[in-house]
Amino acid sequence: MMWQFLTQFAPARRISARVLLPLLGTTALLTTVATLPLRQMVQAQEVAMGSAVMMWTQASFPVENFQTYTSPFGYRRDPQSGAQRFHYGLDLAAPNGSYIRNWWAGEVLWVEDQGACGTAVAIQSGEWTHIYCHMHGRVEGSGQSRTLVDRQGGIQLRPGQAVPAGARIGRVGMTGRTTGPHLHWGMKYQGNWVDPALVLQAMYVSQQAAR
Image 1 (cartoon, rainbow, N blue to C red):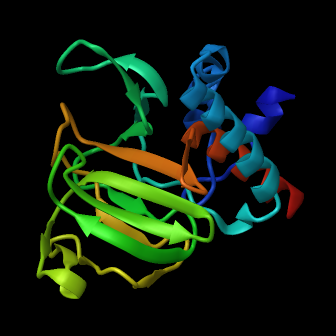
Image 2 (tube, rainbow, N blue to C red):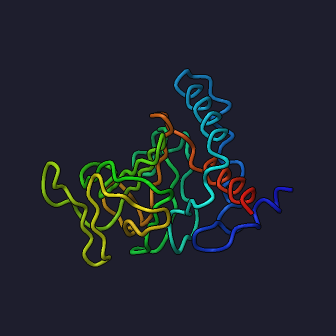
């Protein structure tokens, strides 16, 4: 049953077995941690997955030329400090300059190029917020005119801009706090962090049901 689950995605917009297989077992840690904030995350994930299964027929895998997952959602040993810290996203390694695709149709919420996330964009899709970090380019302008610009990649994004699912919204880079080229992909549902690995699994259910 699980192998059938993993083998149904085609390349590009859908997810291949090579992409999904390493995710198995990465989310179990959340259900074993007893602190209140993490229990709230688990509850948010259950609500989010249950409400979205039938909606993600057009959702897109977020990075081209995917190589491997380098860090799951949850507690991990920080690659720079060595301390145990919670990692609020899923890291997807890809060659420097690989295009990043918008997971689900929505509107650009903000663009930034400062801090640990580096050059980044957040997109709002209904009750979901998806965040993409460590991209090429920089933010130009100020106030309502702030624009994420990656001229070499042909990318320009500004708050309020509508972005369809699967659209190229940036390129994998090494801006911000990172030890190698990858996309840090963060997800929130109703303001609560959700494990992106669960999102990918729910995408499978949605896309299979639509066939």
